[in-house]
Length: 357
Image 1: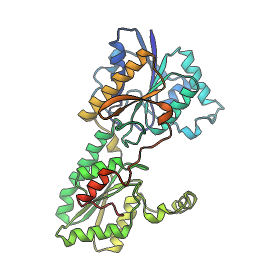
Image 2: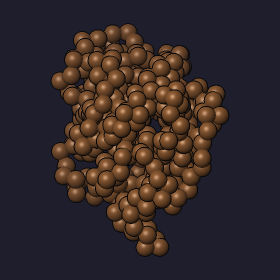
Image 3: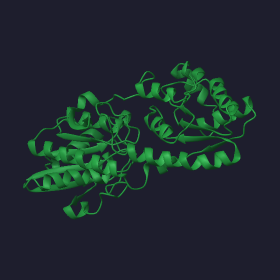
Image 4: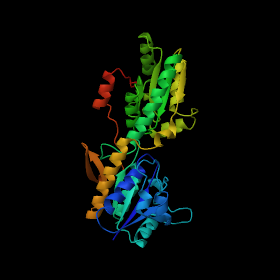
């Protein structure tokens, strides 16, 4: 008998259900008896013992369903060791609930912060297997995270739709794409959607260079320009500030987001009318695309194999199109950034795309 705990943590995304289904189908087809304990709303459920028993029926028909059947919440790693408002030691509570249910392992699906806590639980002696979930594709140790391709599709659709109205009115349009620290989503959606300018956190922009790129397009006969801007895009001036100086500056920040700041500056430095579109949380919603359904199912299947072999302390990822296992200690606390010297950046520039640098 294998007793497996399962939880989804952090921001939701497409294919969480597909990945959990893959785990359960994999272990169920191994021939062993299995009990699945689903913790509600992520680590919160593990902390407070909020769970429900799941059967194979719970995982039927969810391959194409977005969101997560277990619910999710954010439990920041930086406060995980702090007692809650009632003085409860959260880490000890998670361990006690794990042992109380006599679990053989925990399957944890999440992104960067989730993996930090998962690695902490591993260090505390719990058997953990994780799956890489995030639309940002920023988890270290894996070429791809599930949810990313679905989000690229949605953000690309938004840019595609903007093309016709931008061309009709001869405007500059900014499409703000999710990604606070890392620009993979904006970069891929921008290239797929034919954006003329792509601004990502890893390449600080010069607003004069951005305006210059718009001017060049108009001189060449193009009446409109489309910018794909990551929500974490940053100017060269701000990037040069210390963390303390930047934090102080942001106290007086009056724009809804960086895209509106960029729009305002473009309008002040040029004659062009600028509009901003923010797809927002639609990028995390809806059904997973076919790629993510297959990918998440493969990850879940391999996670099931690790569980049946008793191999714990790993994230299941992908390298060169093959599913691999990566030690959690090699993943936790690391981000996979877009290198300014990456071949995809050079190729985009060869296509005439400006990065405002």
